[in-house]
Image 1 (cartoon, rainbow, N blue to C red):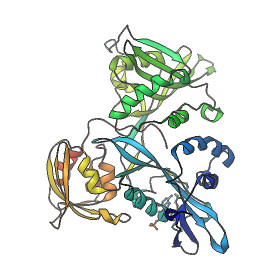
Image 2: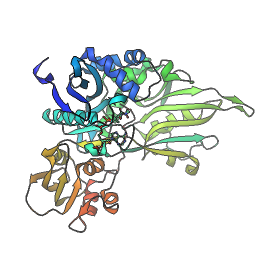
Image 3: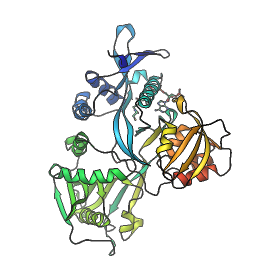
Image 4: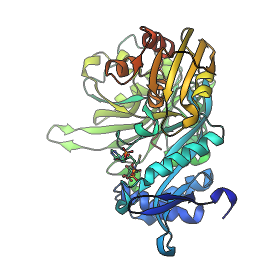
Length: 430
Ligand SMILES: CC(C)(COP(=O)(O)OP(=O)(O)OC[C@H]1O[C@@H](n2cnc3c(N)ncnc32)[C@H](O)[C@@H]1OP(=O)(O)O)[C@@H](O)C(=O)NCCC(=O)NCCS
């Protein structure tokens, strides 16, 4: 056991456990715990086989376990981990802890195991100089108390024929080339388009080879009742300009072919590439429905179809954001307009953030200093996390009575400054 693996005893009622770092050998046990907690269909062995390559590539040094070691035992009863992402946030690409693998063994739930893991993880992320954590939550009730706020909404969308008709004035470029192939054969093109998109799109992280392996995995579990994963790439003379990853499903009924197109990823870097991709997806013979799973809420697709009212969109929460270092995060963010205010922050699990901060912001960053001055606004760190991507106004929390405005107008001016016209998209559940 190395120094940083020293166990920290935590006393619960009536259980006892310790929190320690895990290593590669512990990973199978953690997978068993998380699989059971999340009601996984697959056996732990199959899950392990699926998850191993990505975790081998990312390493196990951030992996934390809660271990019930009464009577000399070593039963893993809880786990958390995080990926070291480079994620695009307001202000540009920055290191972000992508929290993953959270689960508690069912006999040990509601005794404080998660709380002890979260506190330790937060401290370690902070000590590593990382200013943000992000996660996808299985339930919205879990992570607010740990300072995470629901910061991003993305949307799924279903389009049924005949509403797949694109407008006559949708921009088209007859010189674009459309190539449909197995994803592995165009992997370099996909990576090139995604790299460009991820550098500018809030919520996206740069993908390593291991992440591409995971995105392009095409086993029975990924396929379900659909066909193999296909990649359609749009190119111009300078290279790839967009791609979609999708599967089809043949459906035959009384009305003839009613096939389905299921789009897993849809990325275009130019308007004409977007239209070319849509023409391909909407034009597949024998299909009646095209379904997109992850789209940003500002997707231009509704503007490109003849009848935008017939698109069925379903918004869903994606990223929860945690400001691990409040002054650091507010310093490096960009703002739509300048402002100056004193915010009073409460933070139950990261006491270094709690207190009053004078934020004097310009469009390209802010000066943030501790102050004793009277606050204009009092709020929890989770509200700052929710507002950080510029999609969730603080005004909602004010109207709900969850934050306190001491100086009228502070929340409105802060919302104007934090607002982003571009919507976030994570698109990958990690
Ligand atoms: C969610 C889960 C990790 C919580 O672990 P836990 O050890 O039971 O949580 P704790 O006992 O540390 O609870 C800490 C606090 O969160 C609350 N809490 C925990 N899970 C909650 C849930 N699912 N819904 C509402 N509140 C929850 C507890 O009541 C407690 O509240 P308190 O601080 O007011 O006392 C665990 O129940 C689990 O493994 N669930 C299934 C898997 C899952 O959802 N994993 C998360 C994947 S994103």
